[in-house]
Image 1 (cartoon, rainbow, N blue to C red):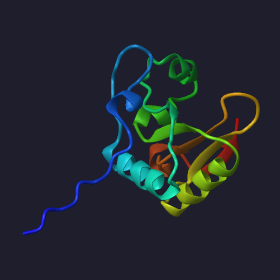
Image 2 (image 1 turned 60 degrees about the horizontal axis):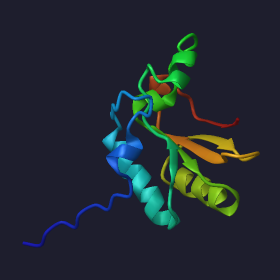
Image 3 (image 1 turned 30 degrees about the horizontal axis):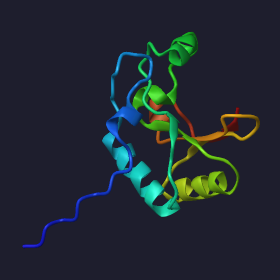
Image 4 (image 1 turned 45 degrees about the vertical axis):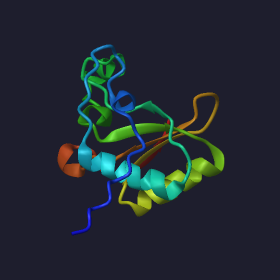
Length: 130
């Protein structure tokens, strides 16, 4: 019997872990599989500026007056990229069913936010800019 090929993974646990100091990693495995497929199809590296954030992470703590963000679900990342790579990431992410995309393409720290949160979770499909 042939062995099933091992699914390629591009992301280490450290990249997906909350960076507030708690070292919590609650990254959604289904989203990780989608993220790996997007990375494979894009063919370029995906340095992450943010992945999972616990509710106590400073960025999320500021949001609690409204509601926690998509990063607390383990189904969101911010990929550092710009220009043609940003356009390709958006194209491929949409092809893989991503319906929530944030675009930060001015100044330093350019990135594309993608997440797989759903309307049922309180996150309607959207494209926005920062």
